[in-house]
Figure 1 (cartoon, rainbow, N blue to C red):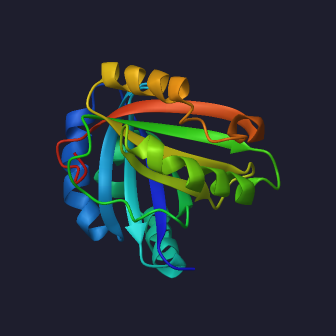
Figure 2: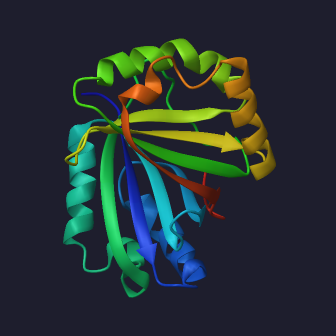
Length: 204
């Protein structure tokens, strides 16, 4: 398998953000993979930092994860960590690789549980619907989860403001642009975090 992505979610002690950001900025260049973005949760579960990295292949991802698991001071944040979780993903095949840069002031991480056997159908529906929806606000990426018990996929959207997010989502439904045809019937669960880029995030 070619390029893979990983989202590492750190649950951190309350009000430890500044110390965690400093530690991550120092540790991530040596942690493996290519840092695409780092985000702090603002709506949803709080005191979370989400790190999006890209890896050339599965071997590189596994090596970085093993290094993290064996570390006595994971990403330099041991003193501030409550928990840490890493999840690996494959980008939907029709999408370009997520790129660092300015996409929006807010990033929404939406995770959908999916009924068994419907991943291919879901990807096809998204391929048809994404161009019109992407024109309204950027789709940073949509990814199939490669680990965990439940089939699921992650989609990340960028917005300039929370007001724009509400307006775009309502307008997309009104115009029939979104959701993809048949999409809601395939879903079992939905969760959402709205996050802001950290000061050191390449995606801003």
